Image (cartoon, rainbow, N blue to C red; front, side, top):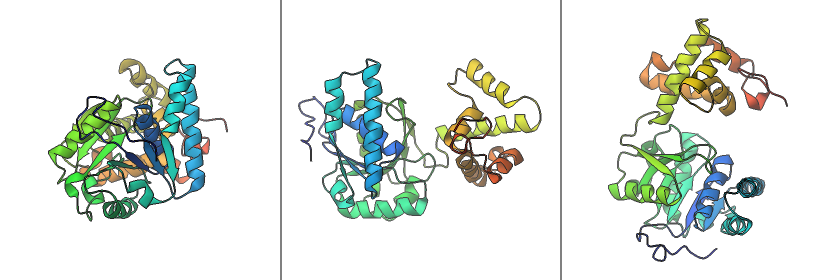
Length: 299
């Protein structure tokens, strides 16, 4: 395990983590591990699949190379960050000495609950357990753990090394100290934070995003404007990097449909997906990953 980061030398409070664990080495998990390592934290990245760990390190190395080419960091700093990341397929090894654990397993409530129950048994009593989720309830995820005051959600945005925002969501019993520790950690990694004070479906960002997407789908179904013009209107008038249809293609239309159905069950018709979206998912037009969604893509 790499040497612990010394918060005293950095003039930080003692609650600053010395070791960070990342559970799940997919695109989000590897990105979070990279951000932590670039910020000087030793990181242990866990995945049950050794191949996923290898792919995660490959993604991190490629991302660091892009930072070097853009002049945002030099070769020595990039190598130092990579050296701070170790990997393991053993969850007990990942959690045993962790002060802060970011969980990044797939968005399946039962799976996240199982992982949190295991982490609660293994991790030191002071460790914070943070789930990276865009809409699942951190209260439900941490239902069976003993340290409910140290459970919360920290919603990272993709890709983590680039996106500035982290959305911190309180679970029902999250303590003020845990929220403070999480905000300080995010700030130490160069991120800005918004706090969702109540554990409510969709939190802040997903709720706003899907409300816009639902209205864009209605505009399309009503024949008021084309896909391209709706996207262009959002991009140019509201200064968004991409419109709602491009973004849906990027994340996957099956994911978009599932998320909208989840919020529609909670809030009603304003989030209900349109027939067009349901039909596209039905025939396998899922966006970039299938080669065709609202737009067409080269293999």
